[in-house]
Length: 276
Image (cartoon, rainbow, N blue to C red):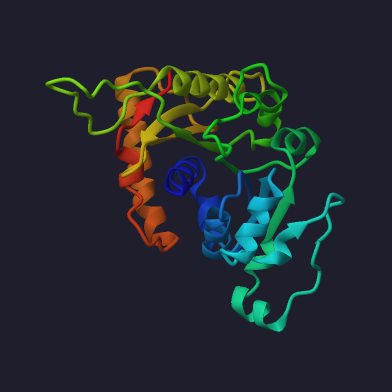
């Protein structure tokens, strides 16, 4: 998700990413779904200008990330948007080196947060499967308040949304010659989610430019959906080839710029599929 998001927003506004990495410009990032907190912590530590808001509905997940995963407790916010633990211990201050000051963790329902927020984000990551491996309908149905309001929270000129989707295709493997895929094809549910986000974020009066695509995540049965504003919409296969070339080029730049501990390129080109 991180590779796809940073490579995509770099393609539409590379200066923002470069300046944010150096701490010269603010990049506003929203993470919906916290887990262990690895994505927001990675972004805040690697991008000195990143201000990361995290929304997590389950207080147990938040508690576990702090107690078991070492996520900074200083990041937790109260319902009134104040620091729950305003004082940081000297040890934590040395450990986090200011990173904690740019992390804001909200225990909130994602829909409620989006509807009440007035922030505009450059980059939004959504990874919100529940304990039963279900992506809540209200976070992807086309007419849901969340999806309809999400576009207002995304930067109109270069904003990008990255959504983690679990594979939903039905494969019959109990056959003499089961199919072999280098990546899993898109199932009906994933396709519906992709088109819901694309239509809500790109088919608007304020933002008619942009594109959407999916990539298959290496080693796991996941798909990353990316919807980005700021590009002229590709109309044919040659235009999409130019988009992919741009993304791969920026992925290599981002890899060096951010000092990634892994190759970004494999997260961009594997199973690249336009969402038309």
